[in-house]
Length: 343
Image 1 (cartoon, rainbow, N blue to C red):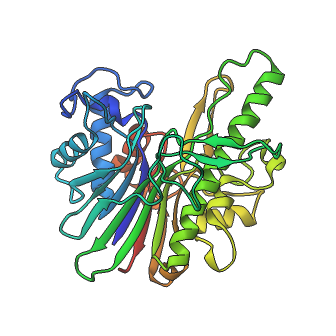
Image 2: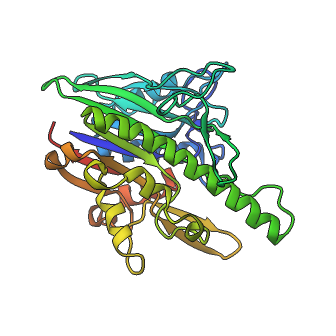
């Protein structure tokens, strides 16, 4: 089976309010890319992936006038994809949902959130609260409780492989540290950046608490998505000691595993895997970073066969296949990450 995680930049802009693809020459939200160009590029990439399960980060919006599941299933129908059914969890107000596309002939999948549902005015609960609730933690060791919420609540899925009956827990995550908007000088930029990073790390601690609960229960687990962080990613990491990635991975017998993350942690200087490519206008150059991961529980490691980053410049097949190479560059500023595993 193949599991994929794919952050698709402004996927929402490719659909109208009834979930139909906008197939015209108008500009997409991507620079110098039309909606038709991005849509066709995504069709090429998804077809090449041929994944049984795709965790879509920044999926189309779900709101009063828009429907994530309908949009994704229409997209799958347009390109005759096997992963033609979709499921999503708690919505958010960012127009960037987290959703799962899957092949219903291969697996069944349903949203299955864990933890106590939020109750207004209720006292803190033991363990990790449900991801649409509030996590209470002292962020800055000042003996004052801080309340943390997810701007994009992680998607929790109970998945079952039809052929074998194997049950798998999936968590799709998109951790995000907001830019220091509103800052007017260097000191304010630093203060806001540190505050936002602290909140992101708190979200990682919350996510790790749920991971620990599954591992203690013996649940096979896959955590997929964009953690917007990695070892050595910014200058504030030394203030906190660990990146979000290290927190979610954990350590010891209950550590999750992703080979790209493991290599990055062992080698802070030198060649690194990358999953995203951003243009920096002020510097007139591209920045590459390792942001996207597929992490698995210890019991799944013997079944794992291959992790792959579908990078247009670093993966030899993507580089040597012109149509796929160009499609990956046009489709998104992130590249898919896949895991092939025997289940």
